[in-house]
Length: 314
Image (cartoon, rainbow, N blue to C red; front, side):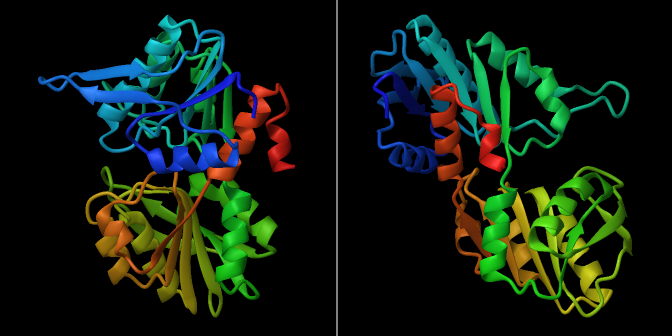
């Protein structure tokens, strides 16, 4: 790897950063990300970055506010140290769910975070599986949005029975994603129509498509409290599916998620390491994680050498 590249990581996902660096045959640079006695974040970059191509690897996962501030301050530190170009590598882009003004007097925090990242000195964003594609348009700097479809489909093919399978979207908004999975796996497609009465609450209505006597694979961009996922799995199971599995890019898995999955009809759940597994998730037998380190390393290499990133999905 070129000596002009510098990788640094905050506290959100150091293991993924280490794996990315290993793939690039380099090391994560020294960066002291600590706290003052009153809780304010203190950052000190330990390497010379003048004129270098800097990549800051940080998911804005829980605690989202702390990890976001770490990333912003790291960006400012590198900007003031005369870095040549600063790319924020954000495997999980937090606050993406608030991407439009759905009700009066609510914020569009996905846009606010985009503005903060630009103001902190970022020249480019590299992320994965944004909650909504239009979030790319919230930035005035280039954004590369990676997709985990190939990685997850390969894992599904190796670990789940797909001969008589159907890919199921848990809501109408995920149909395009589910169709992509179904095409790649050579499976049928079904959609769950649901109504959401409140945040993190889902009411399953009915299933569009045939799941009876088939292996159902639910796919989504993220799993948070797993309320939607487990209710969808139950609905599909009651509709006659012989087995129910699930796959999602971002395993937020907050609150009761691990327990809900363990007690559900789901046989297995696949997520990526865009967010590090918490203690409850690590001990959940049904949940397994696959790494996106190679995908991000290849994208970083392409950006550094001014090569095409889209070719990674050809």
